[in-house]
Image (cartoon, rainbow, N blue to C red; front, top):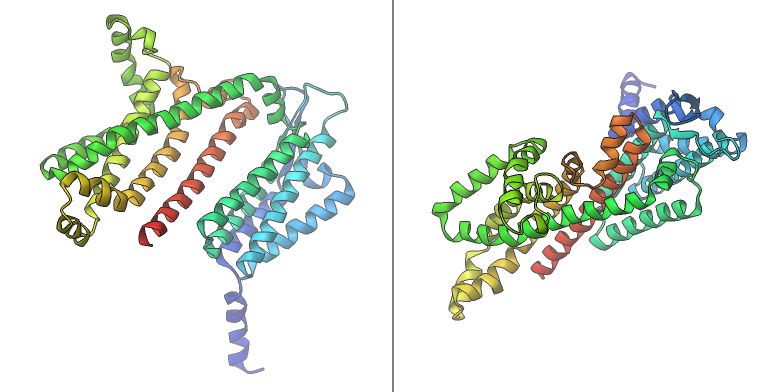
Length: 395
């Protein structure tokens, strides 16, 4: 072997290593040496960390370990994206099954008060292979419908695991079992806050955006005002609304009967509405500004009035950009609605802040996990919708 060949060998080896895979492998190896589950005799005592080797029966330990090791190795090399996606999903499914089995193994028979929670190792592994799966989906450049189909398949798998009771010994599911009625009530409130503020912002923001497009003199003042509103922290804005809404409830006849009050859903809805205005107005302006002049000239040549051009030409062509704003607002509001619990607005934040106050991480997860899942699903569906609308507009 010549000197040139020996120096080229490390370069060839390095070129076959996937850069993101190095991070995935590092996370996976960190997960392997971290506690897989934590067992507590009840909610208030400190937990006992249980490592991965002691968390599962020997036969299952070997199978799950082989899958996770294979996924880690595949992450490191530049394998085809489809194969990377399949092996990452296999690893995530193996982890989902393993955590349920580990909870069943750690929980004494007939015990109803102990708590078995996923440990640091489980979360590190989940992060690693979720990152690997997301990267594979991005590299595949899937069309909108396959992306939605993939989301439905993942949701169906999670639903099947929940329905089967395989995770019923996990502490977060035990918290849900104790609060099922409250959970679905707060889920409804969370959706009302997120969707209601979105609908109101769209209904009011679209005309304001059209005004800014048609009357350039008012554009800077309106957008600067909305920009300034975005700089106010969410908790501060919720607090600022308490006094004026309390005054309205006390002094305006019928206001209290409509649900207006200093605390509760009213200030939360108004705050989310105010945060939602800027993306809707700004994207409406950008979308209308981006309408080709040739399209407007052709519409004028056909004898269309300004109103007809707006609704038949300009808004349809600007709709993909406006829909992008709706996606941004919905994902943003799903997250911000969690903070509304601080002023009695309800939503999943009720469980998050109760859990923080009680130092009960399982209760925090009961509110945080569905919030993240909702935001993630909304982002994927609306991203696909934007792409479908854009494709339809080009055809």
